[in-house]
Image (cartoon, rainbow, N blue to C red; front, side, top):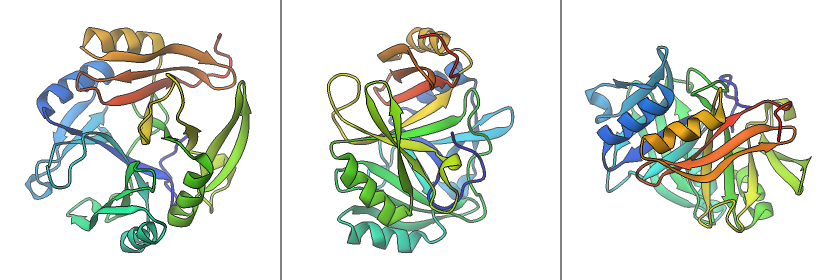
Length: 262
């Protein structure tokens, strides 16, 4: 699972682009207890989402030129321009070049060759989120893509991340970890898009921790969200569910407990 140590290549930030920011803040506030805190006028209206005074995500109104609807995962880079250049050389797309967010960091918007959007974050001075792998905080990221091997090669070249195969019921799961940190720092995975269990559009799916995944599912529906995959026990992992907020932007929740009944 994720930690807040954030070695290069690891997921270190996440934010939401919404056409109705107030409605989105109300939904996620009601679901996770997040409190919105304006990041300051110099950030163009960016909002920090905090839990017990610690930042667990960001949010912004959609910018037609640079904004992306839904959740976007960021990965730490010590050199955002170099990472953007590497993405282009590996047949990815530079959506927008490295840009300074004063008081926070430097960010570049990218897409991999399959079209999955992501961003890289160069700390200046903010290293990343203040909390991870606990209820209401980001704990895992998962790439859904049509070609797992090609995606693994791209992210290795661009972010330097390594992959490992993990045996699970139904097949082998491809996990991701930073090259300089080892498999104990695994922060995400790659899965193939197929059937109804995952979406057909290449994307990075964030997982947030939950003390009770079933209760979060019920609360999401009460708040106007929808269920894409009901709460399900996965041996050796825990209990997880895939949801969508009222705008249709997808995310997942997980109670990480290998002893969880299935």
